[in-house]
Length: 115
Image (cartoon, rainbow, N blue to C red; front, side):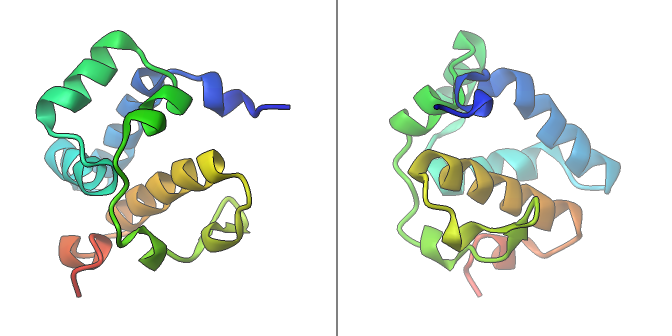
């Protein structure tokens, strides 16, 4: 059975990502940069997904994941992201992990696995 988040619109969760970042003094631009790094979406592609209210399943089906995605490790919601078996859930949790790191004050080069 598919998890409910798979059919949730990305546009309904995106403002929560931005709000979480902004509460911690980070910016919407940084959230968008993280999404671009993870998915390969430019500003226009992200705006299209938000406007069309695509589901997380459709959002990640359209994404071209960054080849460094395997460098994302750690725990989100009590589960190690590198051990999640469902590929779609793992992609969603990768994004959650990156947003968590942003909110915790981690430097962008480290979040984007540049250093």
